[in-house]
Image (cartoon, rainbow over all chains, first blue to last red; front, top):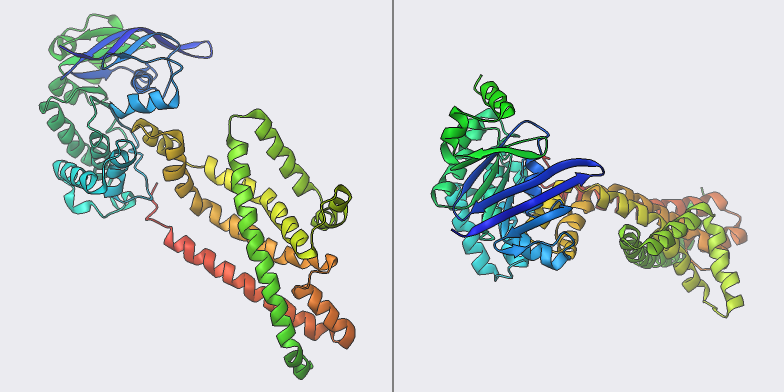
Length: 246
Length: 218
């Protein structure tokens, strides 16, 4: 198994307040890891450290075998981020660019692909997320669910080694959650490596092959979904699972 | 109203209006470029650059434009820099408007939502790519109304360079009415010409705002 993400005793503080405490986590190629836990647990921060939108202060982080220096220059950072796709809670599509240009921007200006090739790749991805007919539209003309599917296509266009999902369905109308989860499930079936912060317990249970439970900046428990959801060990995890199951 | 008199002097006024338009246009372009460069310095990480621009904006906004014109035309020569009146006028207008453009550009740039920038970073774009492909394009629309507003001020301020005898619209009007004594007719006409020039800018703003409203739902 090739490790794609390795956290080794990684910690992060906001001033004196610890937000990540001695995180140890390994995500292998093809893994789908569901990160769950109460708000303020540090789940999003964990994800944002992976592509260094937030910097860690201690410990070692390796992405695809390469150690990420906490004080990396913009060039090194860009190279790292090109290998890591990220999907945000609020989509963050660029409103001044068409759907097609949103997807093509990465391949064009980061990978340096010629226009034709980038366009072919973008259209194929749009087809995959079921939005080929929307290539000329602008993000503002799309529903939340459609925007998030475009955002997934935008991240995939970089052919990343791993995809990060930061509560990708939390900002959506309940009726639109399904179409996004469907795309994510499809990705998991295609063996994409995924680190998924989510409040969708059903999705975590059915699609993830591993659950990471976080609270207070720590990973309290880790294991296969079946074990975790039926018999959580840590008291806080037990309380959390009983609550989300109503 | 002495309409025949207006008609007689109209060619002179229109010719002077061309000078006003020319001065304003060059100053607008120069001022915008300086303003943009200063904006980058102001938002850079270099403390000395930030302070330099801060002081610049403080001086430009805190002193009368008339004084700035005199400083460039009468004070610079003591340091051996002698500029022809029209050049001194353009320099004064450019430097003055740049001082106001800086904060207009800076406000628009810093108002771009963080998520938009992070989306660019997350995909592996370099800082300058994020700046030119995302931040600046997204700043254009919010910057437009105050930018055009300041540009309209610039056109009106160009009348101040008449004090160093640049023969633009205001100067020409003054010399006509001081020999004809028809102040109302001449200044009224000049006013209408200023209004017409600024109307063009105003219409440009409306047109661009419409063009840039890429189905904004955010």
